[in-house]
Image (cartoon, rainbow, N blue to C red; front, top):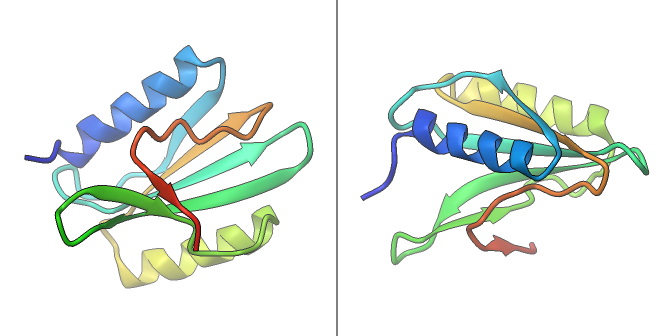
Length: 110
């Protein structure tokens, strides 16, 4: 059984804060079943990465990078398009000196 999205997002933000990062909900979606995008900002080198959740056939949650760019403005445009398609979408932004995403589920490279 999966956690409600708002609970899962709260746990992600807490992990980031415990790790010394700053994390915020940039956009709140459906509390129970909204999809999540995580934008990780690396303030030391000015790069950004975007992570989108997906589910394998066995139901395991994994994360992928839906946009190849590391430019924050490009990722923001991707997010804007995604929100138009899915109004229940959550967006979490994490600012970290090392660019960590704090996701505990597998992150797959595309």
